[in-house]
Image: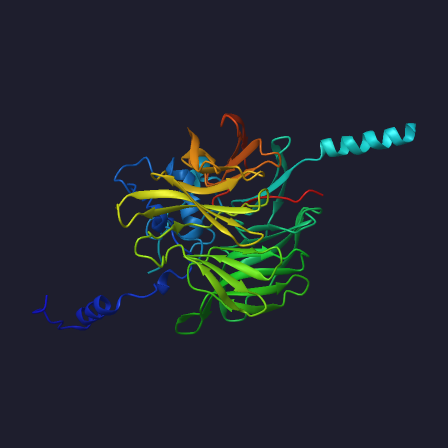
Length: 106
Length: 343
């Protein structure tokens, strides 16, 4: 790596980050500490690569992830973008069919 | 004499009939009052904002303070009229707040809130440092107490009310008079390289029965590279911490300590009974679905398990046998599940 020099802005940022550390991630400022950082329950697989450590059934955990934005790529987030997503469905395990897909604004 | 006997009998009867009440939030806009004596729903209250999270009862049991609408609103719930009295407007103009952590003083006139302020400017958002504010319950006026590091999820107040304890990546003790962190108990940031970071998620706050705020932790021993779990037990009255190691990890979201402080019960996909004196797990039972949170009856004999899906399950603490399942009108999700003070 000593012979590799960064030639563009992104490469220079990566080098700076490697040298000085990334610091506090402010993009996640809305979260205290995701449960993914606690024991890696995972979305598709758990920390051990299996499924027994996942929430069961997945619908039971849907609003847990939605409410506090644990998995913002997989589930809409209530904290900032999709406050009314669950309005038509009080219980995800019972009525998950009432939940609509999310189409991000372009 | 006869009148005295009738009076004594009436008093005894009213005590016998007095129900233990609990509150929890449900989707999309509600608070459920659960009767822990009769194991049934005693009432429902519509909130103005969505999905209540923190729930903090007043000392007289007449009000509950709750955060709603993505932890942005702070509502005052009147339990006698079963309605929302008002919304405390604590957000300054041009800001958006996210509230993680709420505690009330003993007199019931001052709330402490941990807020994460974001300034919404025309061209960008500016993230201000997380901070603790005190809120005058009567007027809604706020005052900054101290800034805290990122990652705080819960607040507690010592009995003498001199120190706030903020549970984040570490435990921060904030002197209310000095307006600063005066002490830290390390969790994630261990001072010794021989100690593994204690990773905790302090989202489920239910210590009213025992005075012990108990949260599961996970760590990796840096010497043996072995993964371990246990409980971080914070005595809320005096701020003392007891770290109870329990062995190989079992995924758990939260724990509650029995009123006699001898046992703890922890939940996620399984329900664990833990002997705190012997520091070991004594019983494990599989749950039919994932649960986030549990609270315990005043006599320590019944465990009320909820969170995630729309149910409260009642368990016998001695046998971990399921006694009853109560269906809720909506998902409690990551709500608090708090016992109301006896009235």
